Length: 132
Image (tube, rainbow, N blue to C red; front, top):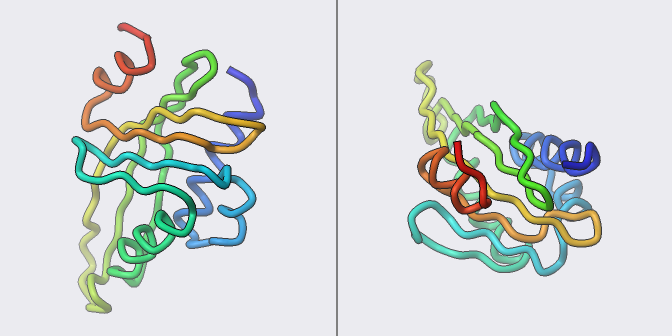
């Protein structure tokens, strides 16, 4: 796994958490594709992905994306990630709502090109051609 791909993955997660759409435009390939967990939707291009992510993050007054693990999958990277938010719809609720998923990320020309999400680590590893 190239150190460059690891850095790209970490920067991409930080940019999603910060809602930094300008940085994401630099990190994402123009033909990026995001396939959500369990076939619940596929978004193609920044013009489809950005509104989807804005909708998710804008539900909360505080929102974060954290990468817990990065796994070498040759030309791809597998990540374990958590997204969390609190203050649903601007409330003062103190509890964090959290979701965890695993992503297989492919690159093209040094940019994030294809992302497919999985519910379990084993599913993501198998999809990436790794077995543990």
